[in-house]
Length: 360
Image (cartoon, rainbow, N blue to C red; front, side, top):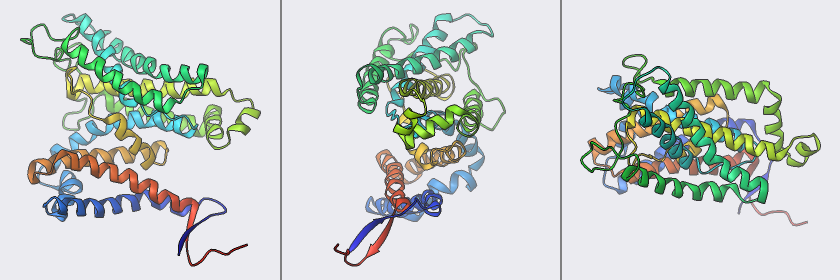
């Protein structure tokens, strides 16, 4: 008989080993999945994890690594602050979309003007868009005690409908011959977000992600608000007795995660994506949940996890092109990572015991 026995205290060793073990287990399970699809499993794993870093076209792929990692890190940093406080924002994808729409709309309103002030305004309104969308579940929880998980998640589908409406209507390119989608903001000088250092892929979104990591680290380790966030997540009643205002914490955590998600959407819009289109959203808001937990909700861990997941995006695209893997298999591969991470996290709090349980 196999049973789980709760540990007296969480195991620090298992907590440290879990991310690496989850990645290893994902490689094995993913290899089996690729084999069932009729593809060479070892070659598929090598294409995903090895070739983008050390293969023939590694120089190009390394430049793309920062581009893919930046929105994931930005969103995951915001989510991790809320998760630590027990506030579950699952709708970052919607905040990502609304941030891009509002910020992009401001940029298009200035077209074809030029001026140094336009891009900062676009960035500001991108953050405001994500923040405002996150305030809906925040205020509903504060005023009516609604579940922020359900509200934020359902708002993703509302945001997607708004995105489709804007792509086909208000923000559609008047010179686009009737095709859906806005003007190309990355080609418009006032809103373009190009590489800051040639060949690195680093744009302003990468800078913002780096600043977010530093800010979150200082907040969680050096500021009293970070202490209140940790206490609220680990012992809510003790937090209330110590004078923490739970409503303010909800508004702060959802607000900061929404603003960072909006920034991620805006930098993606003015950089790699270029235009507001029906298929603008790439699922970064959901993938960032994996990044947050893989990074153990720690800013530095999230940075490393973001780079790892970005690697699966880049390697996954290469595997689709070179090996003919379906795109859904790459999504499933990333999902496996979260599954194994959560499954193995159990070992931090429980021991595996063999034999019959003692009867009192």
